[in-house]
Length: 146
Image 1 (cartoon, rainbow, N blue to C red):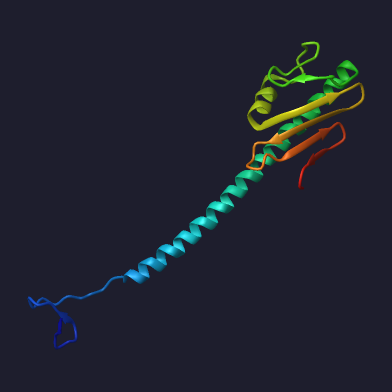
Image 2: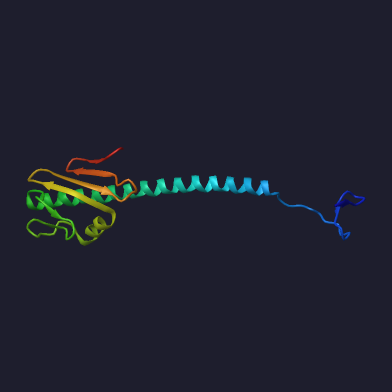
């Protein structure tokens, strides 16, 4: 291309073109930077979702603990076993209300429950990516890895 008197490139047809824009290298670098930012943002997003699911499971289990304490005060013992699909004890008495039972099914994967007159232990997993183990007893709640 020829240059005009002002220094602007002139095409073969004589039309002055102002060649402004991004080069292929600049666009590639911009896309790579955007890709890195999106990858970092997505990993932070996944981590926060996972932590939220653990917190929700912990909150549900705190409500379970309160409900089992009320059950213990009413009946004088903790249930020996609980069917978590129906939320009934071994004598087919309801242990949890329908709302808490629905929350348990939605937010927690129950693994094992054992109880006697003075204590209980419930092992459950949060529905996060790592299926974090949470152990609930009448005295405390323990989250594996925390």
